[in-house]
Figure 1: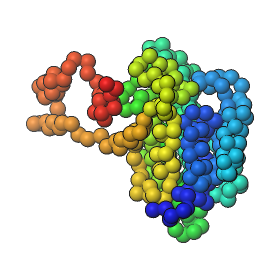
Figure 2: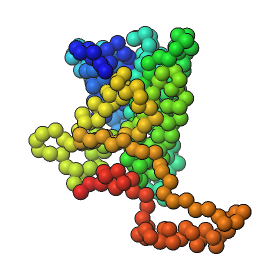
Figure 3: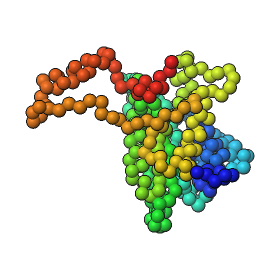
Figure 4: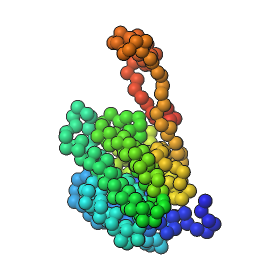
Length: 318
């Protein structure tokens, strides 16, 4: 628990990637509000598909907001999907603030297309920014924490918050690259959580639903229109407090978890459970035996039904 009058993240240093707009911006501002010094990373390309000239503008604007509110912020405008630039990002946090305590991976792009039409370039670009970008920053942050822990002879403070998506949980027909990247991020998160726990580091992933530059057309016309007054249920400000909590000392027992968050709701996602188990009555299954066991099992489900995590989680829109 935080001491009365103290900010939860006082004395801690954070990196937020993709922090120039949308979710990343809200998360950077929230971490700063809670007391963290923040490295605001954003490559600054205007197109949500990663197109356009890179610009310092978005990151600088967010850093200015943090400073205007009395916080500490520096800017990094490198591409986190570039291994060397990701290393420089971690080095910047350490040189400016003396250490790194919190890493929030948020940077991403979209290049939507059905799987039968997607190009190799569209696949590679999304995997590169989302999945490789998460790996790159995690790799160098993890090395920093491991070295500090070995030098101290004890665990240190480290928090990783990664950004997955309900596209991974429930599927997204027009986003095979994005859904695959977001699924990979969950695997990266759980592996990292196991590897770094002994050093005092936790790693968790969130699946946020928010109206941003990347998702504005996804929600348009789908019953998720922005209200004329009051806080938008899909505002990024609903997501940022959970990131602040996961980055805080209070979340020391939260590790390797996946949480869905939007509109004043947080869902803790359980790891996959066995639905049914079948044993062969001989040394190895035969086709006929599998047919006799599995076909009736799936015949009880509606034709064409697939795993629908959104309904399982109670997240399906009414």
